[in-house]
Structure formats: C-alpha cells, structure tokens
Image 1 (tube, rainbow over the protein chains, first blue to last red):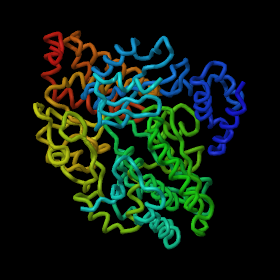
Image 2 (tube, rainbow over the protein chains, first blue to last red):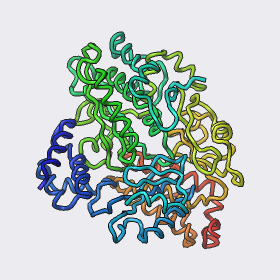
Image 3 (cartoon, one colour):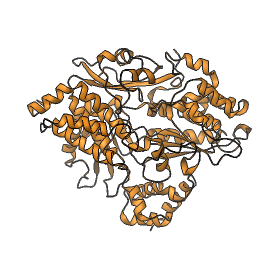
Image 4 (cartoon, chains in turn yellow, green):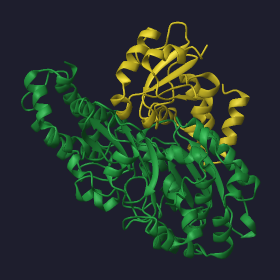
Length: 154
Length: 425
C-alpha cells in the first residue's frame, strides 16, 4: 500500500504533467525517497495508483540509473568513472574506497551504512576526481583522505 | 571584454537572488519583450544574432523557433523545455551557469517561451545536480512571487507555468526526443525524426527544446540587440561561449570568452598549459563524443564550422586533454564503456555493437588483443556511424574511436604486440 504521504506527494507532482501515467518516474522517485528503494510490492502499488501496467513501469524503473530496485545503504556513494576523473585518478580513488569499505562497486557494507556505485560524469571535470555522497558533491578528492570524507556520514 | 553570461557570478558558491538579479538589470529583457515586442520580433532578433544551439549540435536557434506553429488555430498547449541533462563526459558548463545565475536561465526561458508562445515550460535537470536543483527551486519560487511566472505576466496577457523536472539518470535523456519520452514518464528512447518536435513533441503537442546555455543568451540579445551580440564573437556564430578544460593542465576550469577563441588560447592562456612533467598528446575539443585533435590543430577557432574543418566538432566546447603519461587505449576504453553502458538499447547496432567494442578495447588494454582487432574495430566503427543507427549516440561514440585508431595506431599495435599496456609497466 502506498502511504497517505506518498499518495499526496504523487498527486501534487501529477499536476505538472499532462496525464496520470506520465507521473511514473516521479512516483518511483517519491516512493524511493520514503523507503530508500523500490520493492516489487512498491512498484505494483504505484502501477495500480497510476493505472499503468506493472511491466511497463518496471521497464521505466530499471532503465534509469538512480532508481534502486534493491535495498541500498543509509548513504549512497556515487563515484564518477568518466573520462576526466579517470585521467585524474579515479582508479586509485576506487581502490581506496573499496579497501576502506570492504566492498566492491554495486555492493552495500554489512552494517548497512554505505552503498558504492559508479556513476557517469558528475560535471565536476575541472575538480576531478569527484564523488557524491547522498546529495553532497565532493570535488578534487584525495584518494588517501577518502576516509575523512566518509567519516562525515554516520 | 564583455561577459554577459557570467557577469553576475558571485564567489564562494553563492548566487544572486531575485533582488540582486534585478539590481543588475535582470528581468528588463522580459519586460521589454512582453510589453514592447511581438513574439515574431523576439524570434527575429534571435535569428539575426546568429545564436546557435549550445548543446553541441549548433542548430540555429531562431530557425528552430520559426518552425513552431503559433497562429490562432495552432495546437495547444505548447511546450518549451530547457535541456539541463548535462551528462556528456568532460562537460560542466551548464551546471556552472545554473548555480552561478539561476534567474538568468529562468528569464531566458520566459522570453523564449513568449517568442514561441509556449504555455508550459520544464527544466529537465539531471538528478546528480543537487545544488543546481536548490538554486532553481528558490529562483522559480521568487520568479512566481514577483509575477514573472504564472498567468498574465506583467499584465501582458501572456502566461507561463514553469516546472522543474528532476531526472533519474541516463545519458540518453540529453537527446531531445528521448528527453520528451522521459518527461512523459517513459524510458528515454529516441523518437522517429520524421515529425519535428515543433509539430509533434511532448504529448504530441508543439515543443521546443533548447540547451541551458542557449537560453541564457536570449535576454542579452533582446536587451542589447543582434548587432551587439554578433560583435561579441570573433567568428560568424554570434556571442560568447562558455569554454572549459579538464585533464592534466595547470588551471582546469571554465571561462566565458568570445566565440571563436582558439584552442591554443584556451589551453595555454586560460588553462595555464600542461602540468609540469606532462606533455600534450591530443584532446577532445567538446566532450566525449567528439574526435581527437592534435597539437597541429591548436590554432583552430573554437566555433561550430571551424572545428569541423579539422575533422572534429566543437560539441559542448569543453576540452578533455590527453597527456603523454596517460594511456590512449585506456582512455578510449573508458569512453566506450560509458557509451556502451548508456546505450538505451532501442536499436540493434548500438545495443550490440558498443558492448562488443568495449570488450575488444578491454582485451587490447589488458594484453589480450589479437592481430585482427584493429581492422575489426575500424569496421565496427563504420557500421555504428551515421546512417546505421536510430539516433546520434553510437555515431558520437565512434568519433573518439575512429580518430583514436588513426592517431594512436602505434600505441594500439604496441599493446597487441607486447601483450601488455606499456603505461602500466
């Protein structure tokens, strides 16, 4: 079941679009914001609420990089792996991150604190290498000091 | 030298709020356009200015707007969209424009929407641009509060609703027809180009999609006129351009400069040249989907037509610099990994071909390349080029590869011959 708060948020967004099904991506983002990710049940509930086929909504949910169809940690790290960051030391940064966290890209730490994901160009090419933790952009990250960045997130 | 697009930028990440923007002359272009000009006059001014689309393709903005049906019997609602899905690797100019002066984009959009008589406008922003989203939310609320958005703007009889759409991440969304599918809540696959979006766009209605930087130019053209705007430029294309550079250079960054500034000036004067101990090998002039250029091309003017004459494209105008201590095969592998991952899967050559190219480049870089691989890559590059795919993603992906195979032939052969990456030792 979608919660009253989720339904209300979806209905508010719906006013910005020409019809109900167009709100699918917004609805997925709203449910993800409330629950951290989009479960099969959550997806089916959205589909029913918007009156679209669940398979159609599933094709949307799995198309976009930032709709999570599996549970993620309390904090999501998005490490830019595109060309400028690669030239400026992305590989070393990733080595330090995976060593610090004890997980590979795509995984979540056993304590549920962090999920580590690669992401295309974050638009911080002049301050590379870059990564995001949740909504925060961290630029010109020194791989040897990545522990300090992570320490800000409990 | 005038810098209209960045003149209001503040240090320390702050941006001018409504009051500061108005104090600097902001929303005067909107007032002028809506109260003293017809929509056709605004479009004519933009046409006369030689403003070309700043998203990378360089289509003349005025010509795009002229195909919008705006007569009494024309379909409604009509839509206008700012493409702020900046995901071209190496490109960061639109983020700086939004974060530096969000009201400039909003004013540009309202004036442009008036010119094409749009009823509803969207800013299509990529999800990772969280700071830009904050800036825009505040600026949109301020613009509504001041009566610059909503019904009957400045008692002109013209009204516009403006919404911020935050995407969920996919490079394809930057392609304007795929962007419209994304806005309709669908997968971002491209549409058939038989119908122009100005005839049948969002929800089948007339729609104009322009890049953020394109819209930011419009208020200045309206205020100062086409002649002034053309005089800002050193080339046939009007105006200034936000150029940028990244890689192993002394001062990576972005700069507003006259359109037609040379690559050499960008690299040597503004970026400060290569970092000590590094030499220039090649560079991508305008993001990941442009062809490499070499040292011998540095005196070319960065405008749409000039860069094409040396076999590449200006694209987004943000240089990605390859130095002599970075493996060119590794760089191409990184680029093609991006394109393979971001292919939307709609058409077969792109869906199947790009992962195969990435696979072969990975093998070569890791010392498992075979003698025939380079010919195979060249053949694949042809069949993923213009004319074989549904949209421009795969042909764009082939631009660095084709030029890389030409310029880095010896590096490829060394990888295959020595069965290792010489840069990894």
